[in-house]
Structure formats: C-alpha cells, structure tokens
Length: 224
Image 1 (cartoon, rainbow, N blue to C red):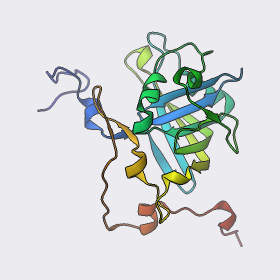
Image 2: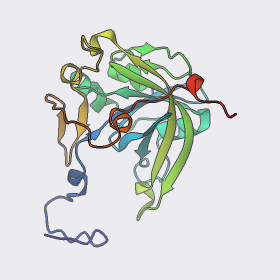
Image 3: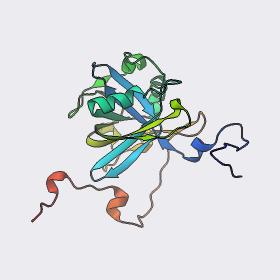
C-alpha cells in the first residue's frame, strides 16, 4: 500500500505513522520551573544526537487545544537545565502517571510516588528509582511547523554534562545491563515494549563511532 501523508488516505482504522518508527526510547524528563516547581514527564520522541560531546533531544507537543508549550519544554528553555531519566519496565506505571496533563504547579514526583535525588551539576532533581539519569544543559530548540496549533512540536536539544548509573545496572564486565533493567520503548497505537533480548554484531564502520567512545575535554589536543 501507499498513502499520501498530506491527505492521510491510508484507509486503515488508525494512522500507522508512529508504528513505522519503532521502538522509540522514552525520555523521562525532569525539570525545575523558575518558581521552584518540579515537573516530570515522558517523551517518546527522543534520542541521542551525538557522543563527543554527548547531546540528546526530545520533542514535545503542546497542551491540548491551546498551542502552549509543555512545561518540560518551557522549563528547559527558561532555566537552561533538564534531566533525562531512563524509563524502565519496572517503572512503567509511574511513567504512565506522569504522562497526564496537570496544572504547572503540580509536582508529578509526588503524584507518582517517586523519590527526588539531587544532581551534581544542575538544579533539577532526578528520579532516584531510575537506573540511569543524564544531567543536561539546554542548547537550543527547533520549532517544527504544524497543521494545527496544538500539534506544534518543539525539539529541545541539550548537552549531557553528567551521568548517574546505579551499581546494580552494570554487569560484571562493566556494561549497562539492559536485559536486567529492561528499558521501556514506545511503539505505535497504545503499545509499548521493553528490551528483554539482545545480540551483538561486528562493527563494519569506525569502531569508535559504533561504540560511541568520546574524548574527555581535558584530553583534547591543544593548538600548537
């Protein structure tokens, strides 16, 4: 089959677009407003953008019918900081709870019964129950065009300046144990998945790029 996305003439019960880009990791973003209110929300349009230095991005739509940016986007832009917490299968119910639209003065940590843990380099708290937390400094926002004001998406880009990994999330040989922590992934429709199986392949390209090895700033070569 083929369909024109401008017409959405697919003839299917549900639009298949989101199901065509799967699985998508979930950024569980915690931020802090200028007024000191903590916000926590999941974003399934999320990924890495680079690794030397590391950058990530998440894309947020709007509050329904308003065209107003989501709190996570606003807070990241206004304060310049955010945390990406790893969403896992064990935390799936809490992730779902924090997806609700609530007023900006509501603390989703409290609503979901989660524990705030301090960060080392930025002010927003991280989710203590999450096995991986990435402290991010805001870089920029790319606003994408939309057909309706409440479907405008703002892509927030941040530089990862610090990473927390729980000891229990590492294997004996020092790798992230994804089969144990089971990172949560978004599929199409109302479907989700989690990582329960993996396999390895010999890199065909540059080994550093495949593995994601980065050079620390203090080790950069200085100009002659």
